[in-house]
Amino acid sequence: MALVAISVVARLPVTMLSILLLVHTQRLSGSFALAGAVTAAYTVGRGVGGPMLGRLADRRGQTLPLIAGAITGCLVLLTLGLIPQGAPHPMLIALAAIAGFAVPPLNGCVRALLPEVVDSAALPTAYAIEASAVEFAFIFGPPLALGLGEIFSTRVALAIAGFALLAGTVTFAVQPSSRRVRPVSREQRPRGGALRSPGLRTLVWTFVAVGAVFGATEVGVAAAAKALGSTSATGPLLGLWGAGSLLGGIVMTRLGRRASGAAGVVSILGLLAAGHGALVVSSGSIVAMAIGLTIAGLAISPAYGSIYALVERHAASDVRTEAFSWLATAVCVGSSAGTALAGDLAQHAGPTSAFALAGAAGAVAVLIALVRAGTLAPRDVEQRTVAPLQPATA
Image 1 (cartoon, rainbow, N blue to C red):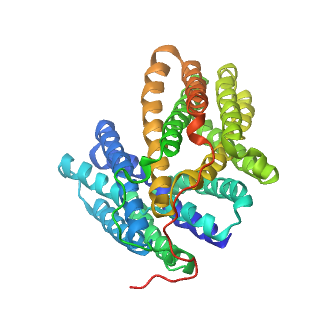
Image 2: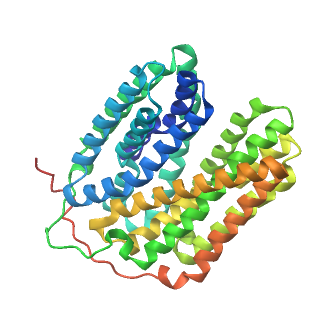
Image 3: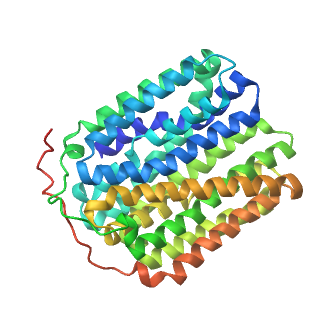
C-alpha cells in the first residue's frame, strides 16, 4: 500500500487549505464575510474542477492533470500569500476559485488505480484502508495549518502548503503505477461521461446526503462546545470523530466482502445515520459527545469503502477517475449544504437541531440507496484501458 501512503502525504496540504484561506483572508481584510466568500469560492472551484480534471486523467493519463494542477495550485497559493492588504475583493475570490479548480485529482487517481493493483475480492478492504488512511490527513492537516500560521504567518503557511502540494503530487505522479494507465482507443465516448451510469448517479446522490451528515455534524459539535463554554474542545472532539472512522476502517478490513454490495451499503449507511442522529442526546456533555462522536465515526470509513467498491461495477475504466471525482464533488456539495442549513438551525434552535439534521440526512442516504437499489445490482461495464504494466509515454 505504498501508493496509498504517498497519496495521503500528497493530500495533506489539501486538507490545510480551507481553514488556511479562511484565516488568512480574515487577517488580510478584517472581514469574516469576505473570508467566508473566499473559502466558498475555493470549495466551488474544487467541486467544478475535480470531475473535469478526473475526466482528463482518464483520457490522457494521470501525469498531465496531476502535475499541471499542482503547479497551478502552488503558483496561486504563492500569489495569495504575497497579495498586500487592501487588495480588491474580487481578486481574492477569483484566485481562491482557481486554487480550488486546480487541486490535483489525487482522490480519484489513487482510487481508480486500486482495482489494477488489488485483487477484486480484496477491493472493499483496500478502499476502507485508503479511506481510513486519509483520516490522518484530515486529523493533522487543519491543526498543522493553524500552527504554521501562528508560528510564522498565514502567508508563510500558504507558501509551505503550496510547495508541499507540488512536491507530494509530483512524487505520486512519477510512480509507475500512476503513469501506466492510458486509453486504448480515441473512439468517441458516449455523452455524459461517468454519469451516464445509473448506478453511479445513485452513488453520487447518496454521497450528497452523506456529505450533509458531515457538514451538519461539524456545526453541531462547534455549537454544542460553545454552548457548554468549551470552544477549545471542538478540535479534539472532531479528532475523536476521525479516530472513530479510522477504527471503523480497521474493522472493515476484517469484514471484507461481507460489507460489500448494495445490501452492505444500505446496512452501513443505516449505522451512519443512527450513530450521528444519536448525537442529539449527547450534546449536553463534552464527555458524552466524545463517546458519541467516536461511535458515530465507526461507520464513516466502512461507508466510503463499500461505496467505492461499487464504483468498479458501474463505471468503465476509461471514466473511473472522473467517477471518483464526482463522488468527491458530491460530498463537497452535501457538506456545504449541510453546514449552511445546520448553522441556521443551530442559531435559532440550538446544537441538538444540527445533530438531528445529521441523522435526517443519513436517513435520506439510506432511502436513496433503498429506492434505487436496482441500479446498484452487479453488472458488467466496458473496460478500455491498456494492460497495467505498459508505461505512459510523453
